[in-house]
Length: 205
Image (cartoon, rainbow, N blue to C red; front, side, top):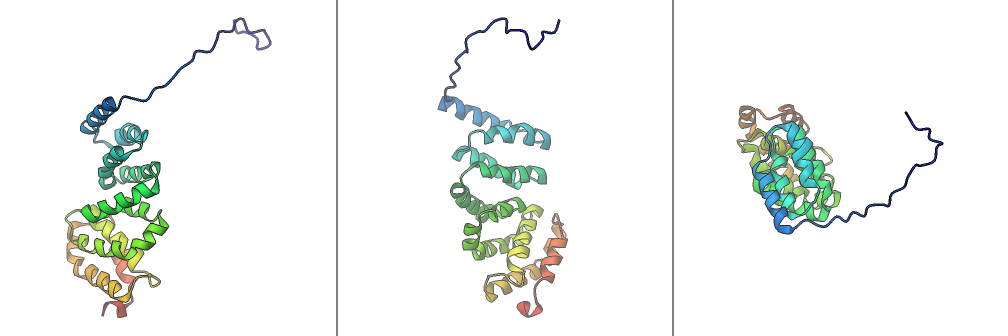
């Protein structure tokens, strides 16, 4: 029979004290190694289990584990990894992100987070454009799209803060890479057309 809430509490037991101790560092390293080696490949398990588990204790090692998911072919996974970067301090993420972009090329998710760092982005805009130009010739559609994204939002707008020489280089690079871009079929080929259209002809010739 359901007890009436007005009835007195039949009994009271003392609180049980629970103390949560930090994990043994060796055990954690073994767990991370196992988790990384057995990481799932399907999107559902990645965003519902694996990625949240490594975000629980953000440090240098788990930041490195997040890196490949910024290059994942599924945009949902890339976006999850991008938002996951917010678990680390910006001053720790920014140099790592810059290092990865220069080493492996940009992706839309990486540039999305890059723009979340306005001071760092402003300081590295020209360098990012320079670094992205060679990746227009990448065999990875994802990286080609990332490079196009950089040039479209940072180099092509008429009010871009970059100098005319770099603007011309970016324009020439996009024109020169057009056949390759079409061949690799980037995620959004309209980004190429839009970016190129935003250039004034005087900037290219």
